[in-house]
Length: 78
Image (cartoon, rainbow, N blue to C red):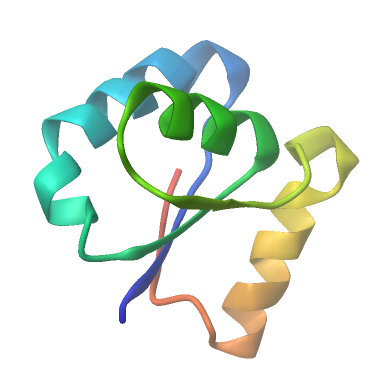
């Protein structure tokens, strides 16, 4: 399954959630990963499952970056 990370700064979270809502049917076929708060909002406002890392300030961005470096993520939407 394609693994996709979703990251948004605080002021961009509503736009990320709207993007995910618009494409929810498509994204249902992905293994989704997100930083903590972004993932929490997406999971609460859609029917999608999201693997949540730490919040960005607590290292979530770095955790996702490590997955990019390891080659276990297929893409990042930021």
